[in-house]
Amino acid sequence: MKNTQTSPNVSAPMDGRAIDRRSVVVGFGLVAGAAFSYFNMPRASATPITKSRFERMIPETVGGWSSRKSAELVLPAEDDQQDKLYENLETRIYEGDGLPSMMLLIGYSSIQQNDVHVHRPEVCYPAAGFPIVESKAAEIDFGPKKVYARELVADRGGLKERILYWVRVGEKFPIGWSEQRLVMAMSNAKGVTPDGLLFRVSTIEEAGQSSPQALEDFTKAFVAASPPAFMESVLF
Image (tube, rainbow, N blue to C red; front, side):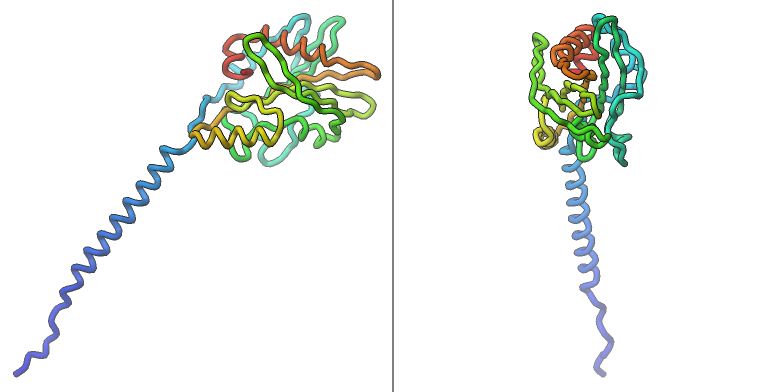
């Protein structure tokens, strides 16, 4: 009598082994991809600075000026990213007998990437209702260090606010928004997440006054009065 019993499916174990091999290959690929992403992820070039240490590094007196804290300055426009823009944000007014009052803002963050980046005054002032009526590139020579900056004049409604500022991204001093984005992108492509600084000083000009030299004089005096750690880790 013919045996009609169906023989066992001998291919089943082979299919299982094939599935296992595919799983191993796919798993290995995922691990390799994760490892590649991790080791090629841009690394921060600076470490965060605590608020108390940051405040202590800012000089209280600069030449004939003495400082006081102030909330009167134009600040970055409020949005969902404001808390991420700067890890440290300090605003002060420096005053002295016979000297023009100087409004200082220093914003610093140890990371510059994507939406976390220095906001330039050309954005902040118009957002606060003060249009920019003059803008030109500037250069400040601190001796061993030369900084590329920008000089602005904002219309404060009958008064003019003259502004001198620079932005530092890593080791570069971009003088425009497009250049700033390019510096960030090039740093990230090299595997580096740069830090960023906004140094801004300004003064109110009465009608007929012009005080660009006073701004530069104050800025140089401020740098000269700053401790080396502040110059090396923040300003430059």
